[in-house]
Image 1 (cartoon, rainbow, N blue to C red):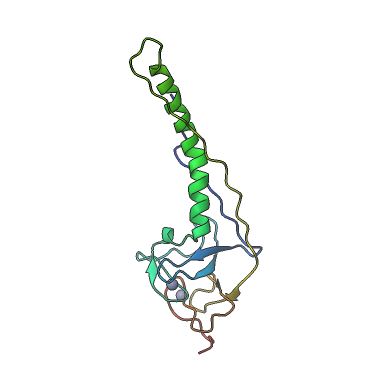
Image 2 (cartoon, rainbow, N blue to C red):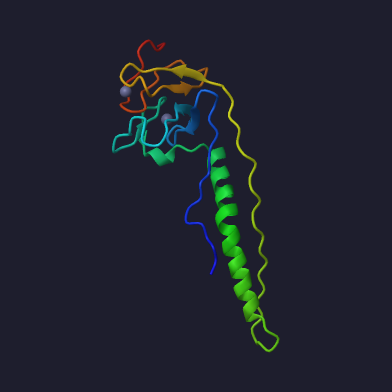
Length: 160
Ligand SMILES: [Zn+2]
Ligand SMILES: [Zn+2]
């Protein structure tokens, strides 16, 4: 019996103010949202969060940046695939007895642990009157409306 983890915990870095980098699945622009501890923070509506740039809604699990998605895949492969491959290799070795007509060989290689991601203190913070506990950070060059993650309302005082 193998000792497989049921789930893999991968932690993503926050910037010094506790913001997590995100990427909109619709417009593919990066922003950051304020990362609240589990159960605190304002929950997303059934249709998910609003993109601060294009205001298109997506489910909470769909905002990973490409770097985060790669990191999670690599870390998950290391944690999860490693023990599974080792089990498989052992069971194949059991088949390869000298009198056996069956010869099976399996090369296994456990993926390396990926380099941890880092997070810079870039981008410009925007607060919302409608949801003051859910600020975002947007690209410095963004001069159009910035929409609230929770309700999609544009922040007041935005240029343009
Ligand atoms: Zn977007
Ligand atoms: Zn709001």
